[in-house]
Image 1 (cartoon, helix red, strand yellow):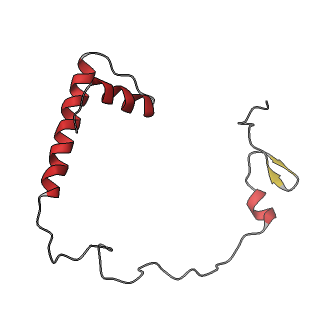
Image 2 (cartoon, helix red, strand yellow):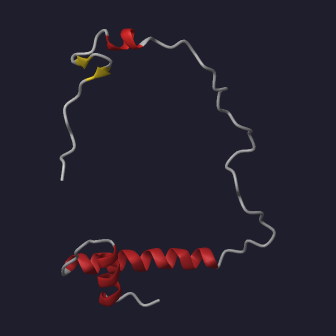
Amino acid sequence: MEINNDLIDKLSALAKLEFEGEDKEVIKADLTKMLGFVEKLNNVDTEGVEPLIYMTDEESVMREDVAQSVISQEEALKNAPQKDSYYFKVPKVLKKG
């Protein structure tokens, strides 16, 4: 694959980035190094090597999901800086329109 300015322009448009002058040359050099590395990986003999699906043989190490005591609505609102009967009052963050 040839890495030229047209390819850099296409990739930068897809990524919504802009590269000028020296930056394009740096990107070209980086892409060339990356493709060279991938080409080396293509030449590695993987005959007889099973694909790695999981990094470990262990089963799920997650703890059991157990319900615990819950606080009441009144307790939750007790120390709220602002509240409106049954709800927390928070500043508006979305604009209409």
